[in-house]
Image (cartoon, rainbow, N blue to C red; front, top):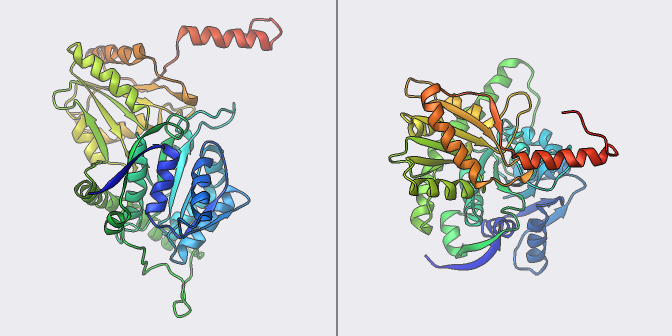
Length: 412
């Protein structure tokens, strides 16, 4: 299949996904590090290269409200945000998902304040994990573009009809340029036909109410559980869509992605772009004779419990590395992976928290995790989260605290 290869940032790959999806409407509000997506789309629309309408709103809350309202009329809608913006729109994420309108939202992940930083972690996107949005998490710029196209197919699937969120890491992927194959628009139209909804559309002869109040818990419980059933249906739909994308474009994406798993006794579980660092570390460990593998979580909603259980069953020990922190609990994905491993074949689990605020993983840290897996194999796992943080970093922070306190040592 013909394609043009260009050097694209993750943000521009997301914009290309929206352009190739032939979206009708782009409600927008700028926030770093997402703004390049909107700037790129505005440039194309202004030059007449993309027949869509872009409107800037006065907040992310208004942006998601406009996105949901437009999608409810039958428009194909794309929007993007990041970090505090996603949280500001959180109320509308729940509402839009309840309307069952299949728009696509790209989140360029960035750690949440306070303290303020521009670097990424996943507390923003995982705060939205219960809203009713499908969630696809990308490792590469190519995967960002492909995931936007897959997200529309999945969201618009008649058995699903839920909005979708595609996540990429701020700065580490949003501004990193990689070779990206941009498929031919005609080929994309064959994969993703024009949106023609039958359930949510605007016409004078088609009266419809959205977001109505229900009086009585039975009706609320019924409609809410329909969303759960739709999420469950999305697992099979995703497998079929991924298979078709592979046949058409030669790139295959599963709900999870494994590396060196065939004979792996120990496995490290990661997600998003920092998996690239884990992949390199595991490759080095394999060269030293370690029977270790890597499992990347790509589809987080719906959560592929059965696939994760099958891939981790019988391993001698597993470490989950979270790039987030549920304060008072630990890593969010550790708890989710543990929930998938319930039978006697479940391996001992270790929980690590790293990459907070975009902190880079050190090579020796992945090697330390590998060594700890040997210990866990003998002594059992632990749910206690272990923070990846070096003595040098601790000393540097202590120096900053001493300066801030006018030379006085801060309490330990």
